Length: 639
Image 1 (cartoon, helix red, strand yellow):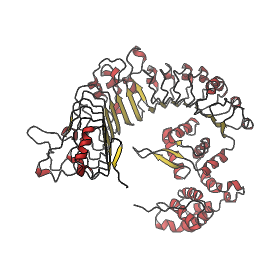
Image 2 (spheres, rainbow, N blue to C red):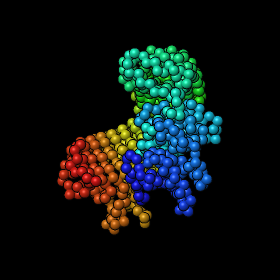
Image 3 (spheres, rainbow, N blue to C red):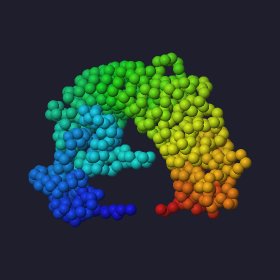
Image 4 (cartoon, rainbow, N blue to C red):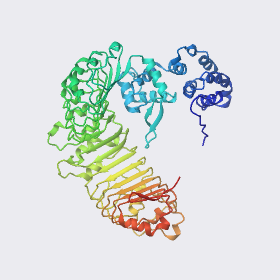
């Protein structure tokens, strides 16, 4: 493990500044390469005047410079001679900025649009870059991939910081900008990017002098403030992001004129706007690429004129929970790449035209209709047309699917860029369908990492693909409300599984060796027959059972005395957390769990019989560092 040097806040001494600079600039270079650069590097570090951010940014710049001549060129740059006091930290930033390709310069400068110290969502930022056309003409890669590379490049050069990562795959989800870096971005854009906070009833007028230059505007509306009429005059505006967290009612009334006047808009954010209706005038925004309507909880429908926005790339409807339908002409949005419709609970069907959206990269939810609208609705089979889908997909309403034909047409197993899948067999009609064959036909791709199966009401048989060979990369699995299953699948066979949740399985009375994947052959014991014993759940770290109302027995694995030594730690050897909730009849834990040295957390909530067992077995249970019973920690490690 490498060592970490901590630097004090405030101004650094020359030696500290050089140390910080060199850690970044000389990272990964062989010793021979370092010697020729250190003398120049120390002179550059001295020009940072003890400012940590300057040292870090310049280190990021020089990291990409291989020769002494390139380093000397940075040292000799005229940008060090800037005289303005307010630009005291800007020369290092300017040096790094001017070293960027033109596309990266545009991407960085656009970040001035975000409020200082705000959290920046990487996915949103990339979509906004796309909407501004920063990646147009780059046909060798998809725009989203280019955007990822641009983000990573800017992050490596220290333009971003305070990263928040996805716990599933460690990828960056969010970040911030240092205040000085943000000031620098605003300095670069001058009056092109503006932030207006509308807090009083009287209309401010400070944007008036910027009408000709302003291209990107963030407007923060307080609850009682009116929508400023002068915005209609900024006709060359390309980005308008309206922040309204207090249900400002003036936004809805302003929309018709806004859509009529600002026809150059490429990005429009109306999230959290308490909007109940989108005016038909939205069809006039023919240059619009990015439209964010998320969290307008009272929005019931979208106008058909929205389908005239043929340049639209992103339509974000996240948590528009009252939205009842999508416009029937949505199939005209042939350039749509992202339809974010997560938690649009009001949708009961989707238009048939969705099958024409072959550019879609992300579609959060597919709703299987009850068939009341005949062939006018999107079906499971239409998913086959959307061959570029990636990331996570939820399919709900599978209880309405009817027969297996459409499920087979979907060919989910061919969608290699899908990594997360939710299959929900809920139904709006209550009619029965052949759920077992439908689930069998919806086999996920082999590289699936996250799988969630809910409300499956088929027979006790599990799909044949729920095994180690078909789902070798599966890391997270949730099974919930599969009420007809009396036994759990042999999930211990899944080699990469890290977290498992079993919820509301009302038919399960016991969990035994079948769960571990240690199958019993006729005339044999249930231990593995090979000379090298199988490891059940080899990578499982988190296990949760909840609302298992009939579950009584968690059965120990029967191991002959001659095999005990070789089977030691052969079951869940990496388990760290065990969570049991509302399993009211469960009597005891299996011995193989109590002996795990890896187990750090045990939670037993609303399981009265099991709680009593824990008290009786306290000498064995107390080996676990952290123990919580009914919401209260009875033992907690200080580490």
